[in-house]
Length: 187
Ligand SMILES: Cc1cc2nc3c(=O)[nH]c(=O)nc-3n(C[C@H](O)[C@H](O)[C@H](O)COP(=O)(O)O)c2cc1C
Image (cartoon, rainbow, N blue to C red; front, side, top):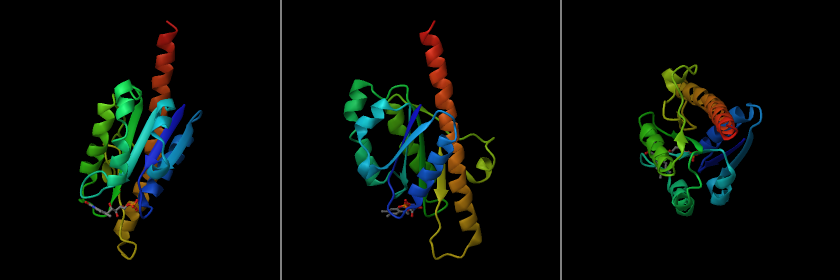
């Protein structure tokens, strides 16, 4: 089972979240994880994946231009239906608690649905998710490094850790889906 994680990141917060997601996915037996900054990610690699997770820093409440430009290269894959039935999930970081996390996550999901992908979020029964997480993927507020506000740092650390739960969930859902597909193909 192959999972591709592609992220945009300038300062490193979103990369940290991407690596946490990768860690969670790798802990599921049989999972191979490929992780790339968007500048090094080849769209053709997606064809060979079972699941794709993409994320970025929220820029003015939406997808960063780096990741959006990369997503806009997916037209040929869309035309060939190459990503249909792949599992998808999304993540982002922002600087402000109400600085557009949900808007960014929802914007990240939209192109996945255009590709015919099946989007996996994070449910409320994942420990901590109902208090500081999100149901649309994983969104984390990254405090200014100079701030001494303990609550902000604590929520950041917990949010990054929650990334592992998203990776694990995507890997498990992908495994269940692939097992079902294989079963049906044998009938
Ligand atoms: C051009 C630009 C626009 C941004 N817009 C927002 C925003 O709308 N809301 C917000 O909370 N943070 C915003 N930020 C802050 C980043 O989303 C935040 O610092 C993020 O964690 C950076 O991720 P990175 O470390 O992976 O680059 C913006 C940053 C830049 C450079």
